[in-house]
Length: 122
Image 1 (cartoon, rainbow, N blue to C red):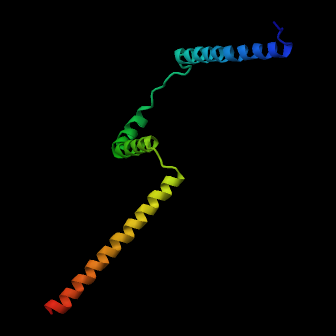
Image 2 (image 1 turned 45 degrees about the vertical axis):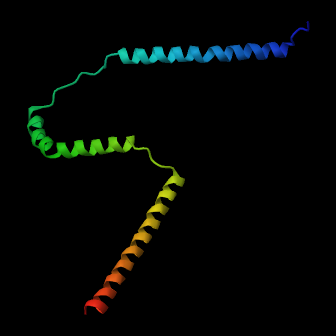
Image 3 (image 1 turned 30 degrees about the horizontal axis):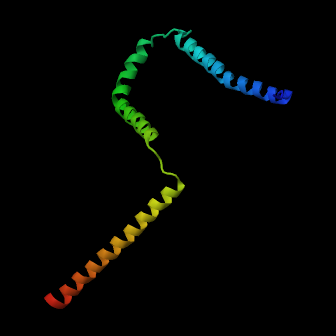
């Protein structure tokens, strides 16, 4: 039985270290995330002055619904799955083709009605 060369042993040792290393890093990241979540904020929430509260109520009544609408709209836009460039061109081409087709159809029907009204009825 031939002995493994030192180069082969080093490669195998390196592969074993690489396999073990990500698990250790992941565990450290999970511990760090857990510590961050458990930490309490270092600042205290202060109350707004009374004059600001009275001014803020009418402002919130007037602009609150608009702000919620805009915030909700951006939330919906984030959840949209946007097409890639190729799909966008295909869809654009489909819209153009259908628009031309229906414009020609309406033009043909208009010419038919014009012909019928001028020659048959008048």
